[in-house]
Length: 282
Image 1 (spheres, rainbow, N blue to C red):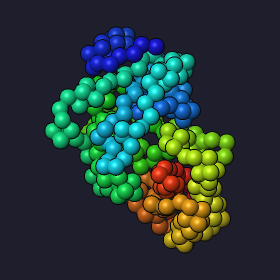
Image 2: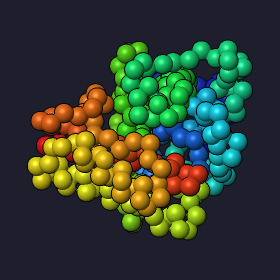
Image 3: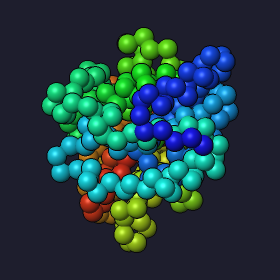
């Protein structure tokens, strides 16, 4: 695996592949890799002749009081894992390569409305940071296909919208959420949980499953279903930001009779904020 830190070196390698007519898959990450990330790499390997991964902890998507300074940075371990999974090229730029100007001067990309709901309410500006860095990475790497995880469902939706609206020649593919044996969605932030919190955390997934079972069984009182799940999580010690049923295509609140649904939740356990979702088709 080759590792590069500059845009010139990145484009030099990719230009050689392009001149040979080879297909390029891309997996952007913030590092501190786990099996969920590696599942994205494995999917990318199936989709293209060459696989590019990036590791960049993006300051633009961290709000005031969030964990940018303490976010785990494990480049050596991450590099070893990417190499063992057959990544051809790792792009690991420093902040000054991604953002040569001060952040307040940085050109930004915004997907309106859908960025201001759900996660956008609790993390203002987060999706502007995500859209901006992904847009820049797409321009740098120029992949044929990019792979994202379904765990970050709203993020996936926003990236698809950005690609469509800006007419980028990039196919966006989704990979299913990878879970621990007890159902907890894999996340870099799971490492922040202490032992007791780690035992409690899988309740999020169980509440999602229970909601799916109720709906599949004919239940259509979505407000009551949401309230019951929130009460269950709060009783266990979670501080719930939302537990909500949405139309999976628009992210608007779901109405009875709609067929393509997603249940999304975000909740804090101690200082750790966890997100998860489950989709269902009726």
